[in-house]
Image (cartoon, rainbow, N blue to C red):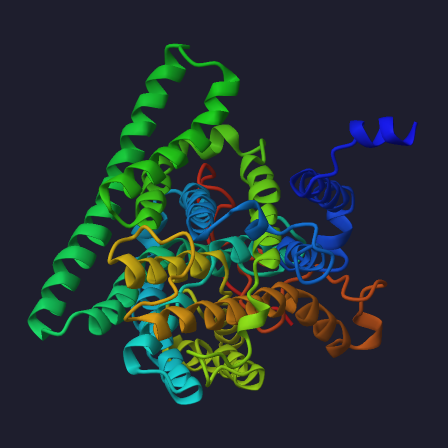
Length: 490
């Protein structure tokens, strides 16, 4: 009987992985309201914890390396998930959002991101004793804010309702843009390392990165999104498309934008963000689908699964000195993480607060300066960096080569970026709980909610228009809400 039963069972590692992922997602779904609105936790840190616990370093159930999964799989998984998320950001923004808020988003993209890139590079250069080009490559991977982590906090929770909509939309728009706009920073470092001629560096950077990848990528995305909007309107008006296909059009267009961007060598993320923005510019599609929660379903399935994968692939053994990385130690990585979290965004956002129209108080500037999570976008960028160092193209080798002229740089960028992403996932993912608990105890006893951190009023020190922060519509299909006289929450 035992022999017969053993032949029927197939407890392979991939099968256990399906079991672990489904049980985790089901458990989260059952208690999602309690986790998000009572514990104030988001999916990414929980999913990463599951990946670590069931990964090769602990229980050994989820071990992608043993399945033959390589850097190419990591790159493509991150490409698809981040592209879907930035597409979703473009769709969910209020209609014609950038026509009204381009200056605020522009300030967060250009001066804030440039400062983040340079100051992080300075910390990497000083603490890890790398060359300047390698420091710029690492800092470019850490400069953008992650749309997946941002969406996990800024959407669909009680806490998100306590933040003025103009701040939520500004941070979402920033996270949608800056994964794509990080490519010029990344390639500046790569070209400095791999090209000797200053003229050649400037030519390749301007023509290849700025004009072809970024400018053309954004233009192609906007045109693709606009054409898709016109086409879908015709199909819907003439009743050529059924309701199920109408909803699936969202996902299919996002995947099409990824395919177009990747095939043409454009900036995938700007193509996807441009496609989402162009597709939903007039608000028609979002108004039609605002009750479906399609983006939330994709978040739960794709984003959480990818963070489980990230947790299972963290290179723990590379967080200590190695043959090519003698200056990487756990203590230095922790010190770098602390400095990056404190100085990567906070000082420049506080300094530029008077120049950013959507940030109206210094408490708001403090919130926006802190809330710059790093996540899956950085994971894609570091694989892109390794691919360029290994092959001179965007397609990585399956595994890092044993002998290579840039072996030291290849061995350095991966563990450093992964460690900072891991720290940011937990610190930013759990910061909502910290802010909520701190705000609870800052109130007088008779003003506190019955449950710990159960307040639902607007956050103190922020301007909440109309009594509820309704400075912008909740989805792009809503009409703009007229601004009443603003007031500060107390």
